[in-house]
Image 1 (cartoon, rainbow, N blue to C red):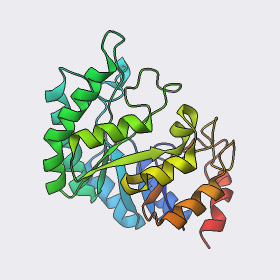
Image 2: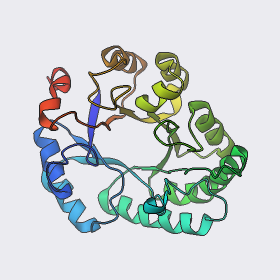
Image 3: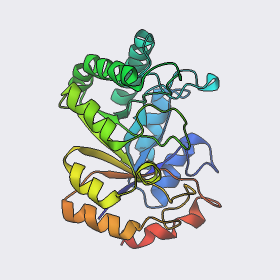
Image 4: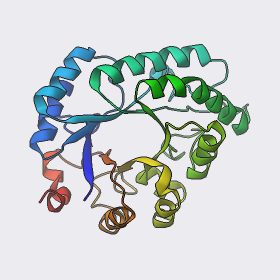
Length: 259
């Protein structure tokens, strides 16, 4: 049985962020995730979580300057000091929010640099921060993101993420497998899950190609969830999709899993 976590950056946006925790719990979610919490006080988020009675299961490290096109800086040579400052901020939030996972955003590559340079930079950053994260009980997530939605993102295939993790060799690294991104870039979902189930630490879902509710589009999520159950996956499944209408009217797909 999947354990669903509502992505509060995309779901329940009809209400202010701090009210989305309670909205998610009322809708049947026991966990939540979100992208960037840094504009809010840690204490306010912690209270919203506690009042709602949900687990915070994942959020992102700071992305750099989003308004100038940054989509993470973990793989950008020359920005290591900025990356480490952002990571320490993320760890402060993770400790306050009792969150066990941080998605380390790699970033978008300038066209002038070889992809291998960026992968090497990300590996170096992960090696430096992994011991600190491990002491804090945090697993660092590496997520491939599709280049249709985010052109130039330097970790865009599952095999790249696995190779980076293998090169770093840290006990607290795991694959964040977003089914939406994988289907767009490579497909072959069932074989990918079976091949890498031992290193998958978090899964995210959305319909393909529109990134709407999971019961829209080309992915058979019923079969995928059954396969995860048979493989013994007991992690969270993050619902990171854009509702076609209001959030609540689009939750029918989840009802059979809440019984």
